[in-house]
Image (cartoon, rainbow, N blue to C red; front, side, top):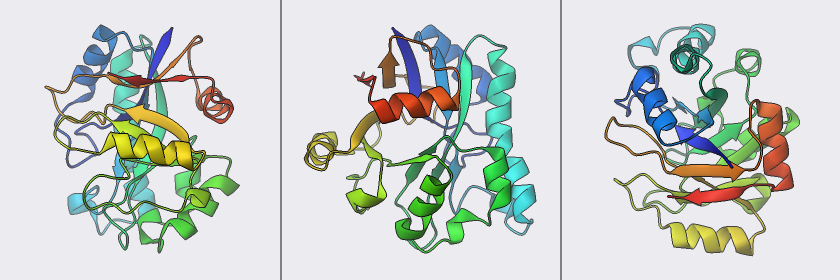
Length: 222
């Protein structure tokens, strides 16, 4: 069986993370993972002192998280490009986007400026990507309409937050949403223990999207 992490942050882009790419790669190799989806934050804190830069320069900065993971992996583990987007007007709601590309980010304006999920979701789906709400029942979050989502995190395994995973699992089942889990990796002392398990390796975003849509995976709960 092959393990894919669906929710991972590095200090290179995500302001709330402290782990660098080299440490992340070693942690996941030791834990037996074959793939990591890099889901750096695109939120109000992401660009820090770069807030006045043009969006194209912000995208260049955003890519450093993914690129550093690829460099550190040295072909030993597959690194896929993803994102966790929070719009300024509806923060702290976070949305994991799978199948996203650098070209897509460069073709749009700053997604943080969108009004809400009703604007983000069509944009994602029209471009053949998928959108999942991260930790939707964590305190401070507001659950989105199931019609705007492909799925949700039915277990967020960040040990420093209570994401009320039991409620998320019941909600996904009730609304026929795809359920994934994620480690929500941030810190050097964090242990990889979330994601999805498949009987084939997930080596690119095309395979990841097909796996999610066909539900040919088992969520990892630790």
